[in-house]
Image 1: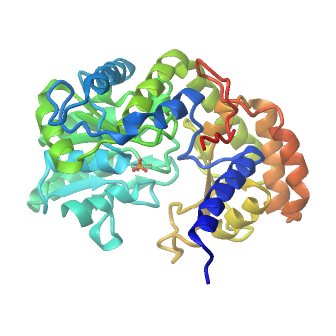
Image 2 (image 1 turned 180 degrees about the vertical axis):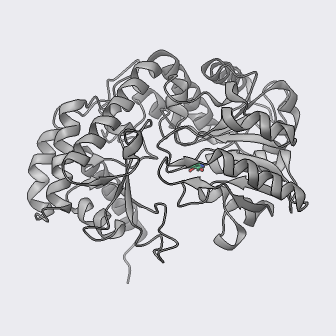
Image 3 (image 1 turned 90 degrees about the vertical axis):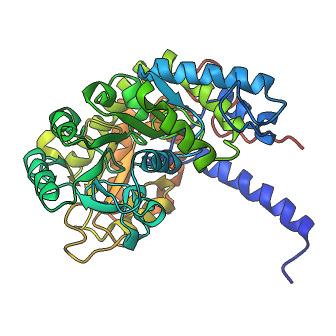
Amino acid sequence: MAGSQKESYKKIFAKIKEHHTWFANSIPLIASENIPSPAVREAIVSDFGNRYAEGWPGERVYAGCTYIDDVEFECIKLAKRLYKAKFADVRPISGVVANLVIYSAFSNPGDVMLAPSIPAGGHISHGKKEHSGTAGLVHGLDIEFYPFDAQEMTIDVDKTKKKVAELKKSGRLAKIAMFGGSLFLFPHPVKELSDFLKGYGVHINYDAAHVAGLIAGGRFQNPLREGADTMTMSTHKTLFGPQGGLVLGSEEHAEQIKKATFPGLTSSHHINNMAAKAVAFAEALEFGKAYADQVIKNAKTLAVALSDAGFKVLGERRGFTESHQIAVNVLDYSDGGKVEADLEKANIIVNRQLIPGDIKAGRNYFHPGGIRLGVSEITRLGMKKDQMCEIAGLIRQVVIEKKDPKKLLPRIKALRKNYQKVRFCFDDKLGAYEYVRLR
Ligand SMILES: *Cc1c(COP(=O)(O)O)cnc(C)c1O
């Protein structure tokens, strides 16, 4: 027998608590994650999460939305200010849903979309039907990949122009050009390609899921100024959380986007998370520049330290990274899957990563050639240069020197001792990983 439901009930909370303790004593380096402030967590547990508010604020199809509307107007205002955008829809509940909003608003099933392939940094939500990618599987888009320059680690501009002209010739001109990605070290050539693509009438979307916080801080490219028509994102990677999505654009695209979001792709838009997004946007307006600055400094420092420690860090020719991410080829030691597992035993949390050349060499997602590291979370905890160097040394001990990961745990606990609060926020009363009991 599997035990009573009361035992399960207790076990659930025990496991969540163990998770909190684990993360408080770990080096969290997942590039798509961050740690929200106590203020964002407070909004998430509010009663807003139990309500419906379908429609646009002020024009809802539900009663009881008085205060929700006030907060959503505030949220829209802050999102527009943060990205200097004319229009913002804060309702998409995730980055994938935000991308689906764009597909639905600006293309039809059967249309072609230009997007980065996954080893070239693309996200599965840009992917083909045969890979169960959202664009192909859910909206029936026919995906063509950008030509990619693996030395420069970005989209190849000249080859892309050629490809677009060829697609046009064969009657398969792309309806949407999708920029942005998940392995994302350097800005994409939006400025270089936007006039060209617009000449063909292609809708340009920039998926800022990973770099939204860096763009907000003015430390990455500025897609809406460089010619992107619309921009989608997750609100929790380099932005300050909660998990959610956002679509930005101009007035011209507003009606199509609104209809695609509701009723097209949401019913409840998770109102508590909408309120938490508003809090995060306010934090980003106040602290975003200083944060983005430190994130990029830390990423560069960690990349150099890893390279000095003997690792093959990608993007060397261009200084390794201009974002929060670092990608490392680990094939000299084993593969990305094994390295991920070994590091986890030392409480160093990274993820395995397909890198350029993997698919051709027959490697797959379970045993890819690389790992990806992100410094968003450890930067939000206040870590700087010295800690980056120490972390690179710890990773070296596990992966290159093959030390027993368990032996490193006390050092990692000591390293975390002074970094238990969320920085770059208005109120820091609650600890970053402090467990809150409400029962
Ligand atoms: C993470 C990611 C997404 C998906 O975002 P969710 O909020 O998890 O749905 C979309 N696009 C890119 C490029 C991403 O990296």
